[in-house]
Length: 72
Image (cartoon, rainbow, N blue to C red; front, side, top):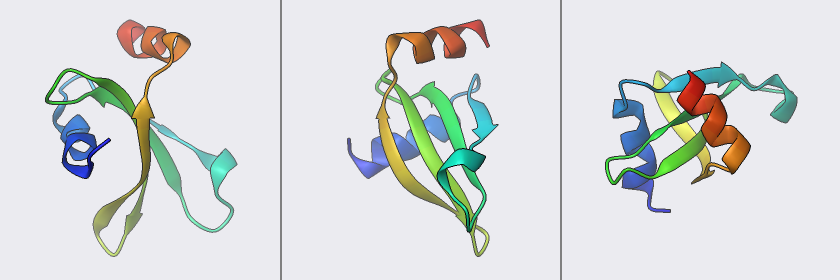
């Protein structure tokens, strides 16, 4: 997945963001569920560093994750 598409998830008005403490012991991480500008449903793992959002990874949602997103 291209970086620009992953970034576009943050423009989704229905985006859902959760803390993700299980995947880092040295920084706060979050998971964001949302839809990209091309309508792909993705999950982005990210952290805040020096006032900026750093994307760690992005991938398509699995079926059970789509259900979480759709239920809000």
